[in-house]
Amino acid sequence: MHIGLIGLGKMGFNMRERIRKGGVDVTGYDRNPDASDVGSVDELLATVPAPRLIWVMVPAGAITDAVISELGEKLDKGDLVIDGGNSRFTEDQKHGELLAAKGIRFVDCGVSGGVWGLQNGYGLMAGGDAADIQRALPVFDALRPEGEREDSFVHVGGIGAGHYAKMVHNGIEYGLMQAYAEGYQLLASKDIISDLPGTFRAWQKGTVVRSWLLDLLVKALDEDPGLQNIDDYVEDSGEGRWTVEEAIANAIPAPAITAALFARFESREDSSPAMKMVSALRHQFGGHATRPAK
Image (cartoon, rainbow, N blue to C red; front, side):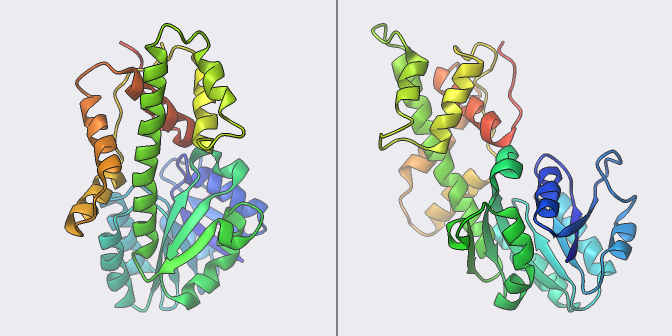
């Protein structure tokens, strides 16, 4: 199998390597010539055998729109496009309709794993027609962790379902990080706590709050014990907002996720040890940029 991959940033670059290690040939294109295998999208499409499978891994929004529109003009009937970025599910439906009018297939796939995906594998949530999912299974299997497929991959439903599931996943992530961060601030403020990093380290095995995020929290404290080198300004990537908007639209109470989102807004105004930890955690799992301490 030979696929094309458009977008070789901090996620796509590692995904290309993992797919290759999984036995699938990949030709990658990126505007950065140092990362790209070819010089243009046209050259990429000429390299990938028909019927083509093209995975798009670029930032959500206008850039994804432009890439999908370009592919719609250049691909052939029967080719398959997978959007693995963080597009909003409503955009998937528009992209699917645009491509379907030209006989081009479309799948959306939420991808979780951040900068650790090359080593550990990626959690995958796909939306689309069952035949298209089956066609792309060798790629999904190359990307996901070893073990049972059901433990790291799901065909969620029709077009848009994959990114909807990823949106909710990221909303939950907001709440989890906020809870760890508030616990960190509470412990850090108490003078009777003499070993703050050791407290979190002792929770890593045998406790009900153990998790990969907790492991990354410990790693962050090992690297910067007092979080002295990081500012408390925390970005939100979009999915947290979308999750809250969906909760409102469907009258579903989501107080923890909503409060976590609002805490990020507050971080842009006041100094907060808790938000330093949220920023540190985002950097640990996703490579998201942090701001240096003021």
